[in-house]
Length: 506
Ligand code: BES
Ligand code: ZN
Ligand code: ZN
Image 1 (cartoon, rainbow, N blue to C red):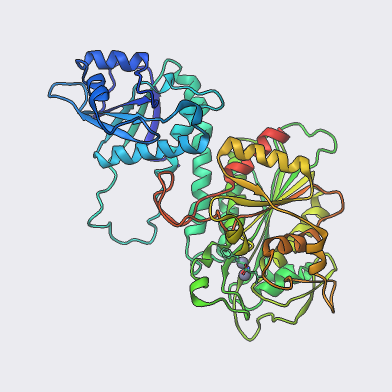
Image 2 (cartoon, rainbow, N blue to C red):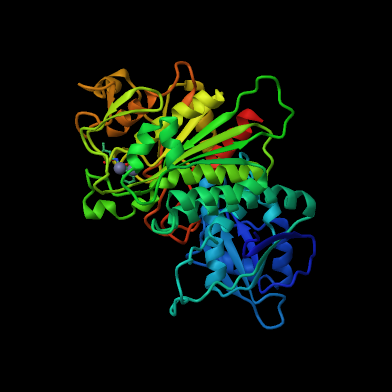
């Protein structure tokens, strides 16, 4: 898959392009090569910069300067990068996205970034993240549009050329970011797909088709196998739908020669292709968007794609329980008591608390089968996490401080925000059931994300490092962003997982 616009690195001093880009921090000082361009252009850039009343070089602000006839370019875009010490990965990627927006607004077809290599900050690679934001901002999802929109000009930009002396080095470094963006796009696509097209069977088949050629072993258990294995919870949640549940197991062996006893990292993703709430049905307004309830599974699939593509040295396994929470005369009910794969019994008091049920069977399976070094699950698990943290922060629950620190550090590296949430035995006690080993909801709405995490913790072996990421708030975005002009799916989690594995297990 090659992405448009192409991002290429080149050494040439006379690139063919309609638009030249020059980056400046908020001090508005021109870097050396920008000064050179300025003098070739007769000082037009410095003249504009010192006389312009509103261009302050703040992050993502752009100043477009039309050039006179016979100039090498039609225009120069000065890109504001804001205050040097205040830049972080997130802001930088937003600026990259804004740059793409500015180029498309000008109808630019070919652009050249003249001084990108001279723009540096202390803590991270500014250029790579700028380009990552640029790339993420090129995401589109028009699979179901039969006609292009009349009032919307199609983006024209075909190529961004970045000038550098080290073409080979940058090309190599950026190529990993390109696969990362592709992986994020896979996750976004999956979440954006409608539930009548993407349901457990088609989801599982997609995973197999996408990952098998990359060397990931993909096994799919169908409804009969799920029942035979005794995954009672996954079976129950999926039993009402004509789209039968699936259980998908992906394993990536890792390229490193196996150190004896090297345990894999395990990823688990909630894969509800639709969550109507079941018999505890959701109100109409709350049901819309519930095609996103497989956001955790999609992030895990995107991450596996990334790991396989970049030939991750560590072994990683991922499991995705996938089902549709629907209604029929066969639907599981509030009051049902179901035996889980672990053997523990669960009293269902609300069929809309279904994610924790399918995850419970998956968590048991992955531990029994793979004895992983660590488990990370991602799930659009609770509406309550939106109340606690809004749509920017993912809630992280972990039984292991060291693991939390690792996740926090990957969050800094990638800009995918996290916030640690409390686990406490009081939450677990609240889940005690009168009739079964555990019930699937707490006593009220308070602390709903923590009671959900407490439920999951019941299915984690003692001493096993585990983190549960409640991504109900972050899996989608409400309005377009420079790094995602097509709201709905965000693709959250792919970069966090990739960085987490790279930093700690390779
Ligand atoms: N899939 C939902 C959680 C959700 C809500 C995701 C909003 C994204 C946006 C989950 O299955 C659910 O319905 N949870 C219930 C739990 C409750 C019944 C204890 C909730 O959050 O209301
Ligand atoms: Zn639900
Ligand atoms: Zn759900």
